[in-house]
Image (cartoon, rainbow, N blue to C red; front, side):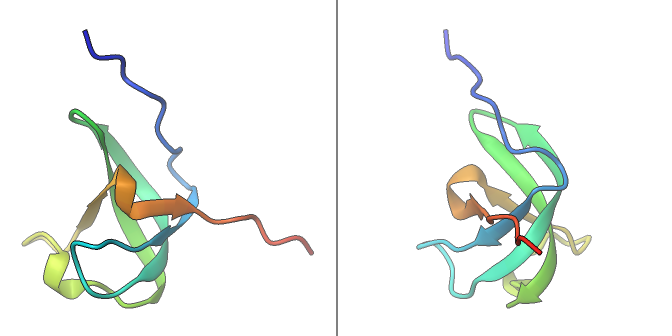
Length: 75
């Protein structure tokens, strides 16, 4: 039996980068789904929009190994 590990929370700021595509961006997790690993829908806020990797409806979904949480910026 596979144990589902905790995912990142919706609203978490992340950096998206992968060996599977060119381009990187910063974004916010807008949705999360689990299917043998976490998939995250990203709202891009800076960097490459990764248009070539978007679904037909314009959504950008990436795997858990393609995102890294960003450190909160202290004022």
